[in-house]
Structures are given as structure tokens and as C-alpha cells.
Image (tube, rainbow, N blue to C red; front, side, top):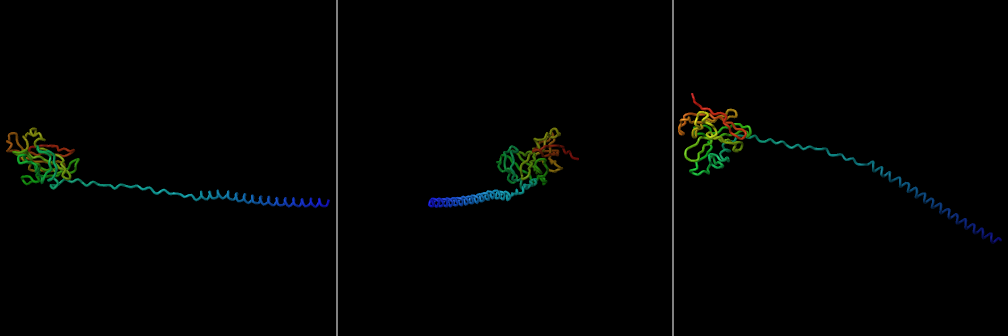
Length: 246
């Protein structure tokens, strides 16, 4: 009887020790879960804190100031009436039944011995200037110069050639064919007859020997003044008057 009680007590002690060990292990596991839970909770609150910090440190970019580039203004050089140095080697169209050419020292040097001649007159036969400057409404100032020519044989009445800036050919006025001389009571200008050029405002006045209706072509008995104006690419005679004299 004493042996069975001792055995029972011994078994009870073992069971108690086992239960104590299990309780201690459970407590330790509970403690471990508590620590992990705390760590996990702490970590979970750190992330939004870090996100909040990132949001508050955003960078603000300022756009560069706009700039406006202004193109430099350019002023065209003034157009000037050409002088003799620009006229004497000018290119001209077909004139006086001669083909287009480039002058050499004021003359058409391409013509043969029996083809006649063509030349610009810097100075007239009487010593007067053969050039004058006048304005135009479309090409700036022009230089008018007396042009003499023929196609061989006897001389022809003079003409007036006009040149713009740089010696550019502008226009031409044939004093014989471009005017109705009969309507003015005359037969036409005399051969090589221009004696004077003058300018009044925008008008070029040309004085020339002229033929009366009864004159032979060799022998002019009167004179005339012809007023020319340049504009819109043309040369127009606005007045023709016989100069009867005193």
C-alpha cells in the first residue's frame, strides 16, 4: 500500500514538472510573440513616417525667364545718280538699230566700219555738259545723258538715255520718233542738234536745233525746247515748244 502511494506521488511530481515546463515554454512563446508584434507594429508606423518626410521635401522648379530676340534693323543705302565713271561702261539694250551691248568708255566698240556708231556725250560739241541729274518717282535720282548715233551715213537727231543708281539703264527717249513735231508746227529736231540740258524740279529741259517745215535736213532754221519727265519706267515728253527767239 505504501509502495503504490509512493509511486503515485512520484508520478504526480513528474506530471507537475512537465506542466511547469510547458507553462514556462508557453510563457516564453507568448513573450516572443509579444516582442515580434511590437517590432512589427513599430516597423509599420515607420514607413508612413518616412513617406511623410519624403512628401514634405519635394523640390520646386522655377521656369527660366523668357527672352525676346529683336532682329537688327537694316537701312538700305541711299540710291545715287550715277556719274560718268558708272555710265561709260554701262550695259544698254538695242538702240539706234544696233544690238544690245556693253559700252567701253561711252562707246559701242562692237560696230564695224560701215555699221555706224553709238556713243554717250559727256560733253556736247559746244562745250556744254551732256549730262544732267533729275529725280524719278520709282528709281531714285537718274542721270540723263545725250546719246548720238546713226546706222551709217549721215548723222541722226540726238536722243536722251537715262541711267539709275550703279549705271543701270532706265530708259530712252528718241527726240525724233517719240514726238509729234508736225503738231507743234515743226518738221523735227536737227541732226546732232542738242545744245543744252537743264533741270527744273523733276523735269529735264532739252534745247535742240529744229527744222521748220520748209528747211532742208542739213540746215535747221529754228530751235525748240522739249520737257521730259521720268517715272513708272517710262520717259514722257510733257511739253514741246518752238523757241522763236526775240
